[in-house]
Image 1 (tube, rainbow, N blue to C red):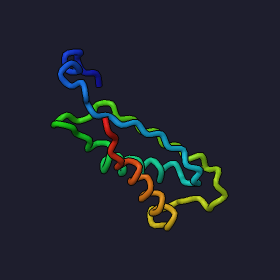
Image 2: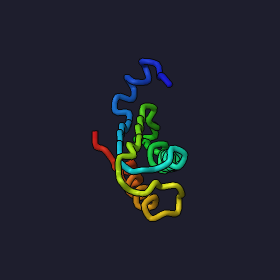
Image 3: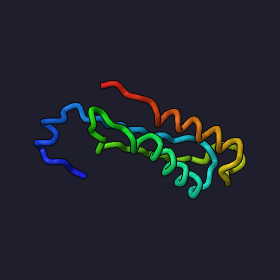
Image 4: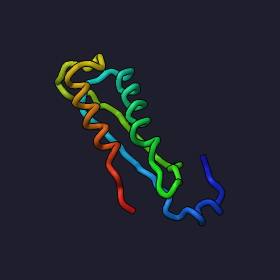
Amino acid sequence: MFMPASWYEDHDHAPFKIIAAFPDLNISKKILQKLLQEISEETFNSITVDGDTSTSDTVILSATGQAANKQVKNQISEEYLIFKKSLNFVGSLKMGL
């Protein structure tokens, strides 16, 4: 979504967040995508500053699968819950301007 130039002149400190994460966790694509959607709703899709919601958030999440661990195949495993908590923490970080 692009905003007209006049919008940026009035909102020169519009909030945005960029996060790229490449964990070596062995996790199924389906579970990872579901987790990313859930975390995004809780963190990225809620950023506002002075009533302005960010239009430029970017999240890149790609599990490399290089870990020698057993594949995470469900959302109740201990590994999944630990990873979700960590990812939620990263997504919730407040960045200063």
